[in-house]
Picture 1 (cartoon, rainbow, N blue to C red):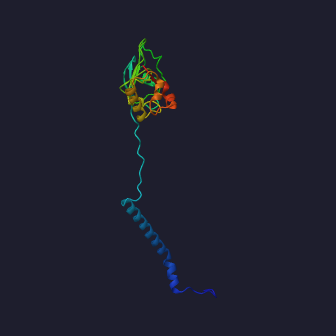
Picture 2 (picture 1 turned 90 degrees about the vertical axis):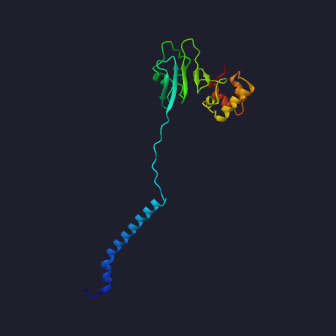
Length: 198
């Protein structure tokens, strides 16, 4: 032993020898306790992991009728146009008159699109009621459901149009929509090109 250096007491040397083992045991106890706590939380309604569920794509269908090769109901994707539907239906027949139809029109679910023959008035029945020329709704034949397909028209305004027609009488001009409660110039401007009076 070097002169002037004191030897550590006997008990201190024993603690130094066991210190690493004690630290390992404390670490293992903490680890086991943490795992037990996590298991308990998982069973006791603690943090719950929720995995995102894939969202189902809605099935959109439209009816192509009139002078097309294969009239029928076709499934389409959101954003498809009338031109896409006519292609699905095999294209127009030789005597079809598609000049009055807006082929760039976006398809609506449950829409009914009619291709007239030459000389025939282009009519479409949309949602079971409205007579339509190139997908323009007749104010005097449309149902409330038909009106809801127009931009800016919800269930309340749609019902107001139907009630106005039943109370006051048939529309004689599109501008008479301004007499309907809830329809102002901005709404009329938004739907003006989508409605007609027959």
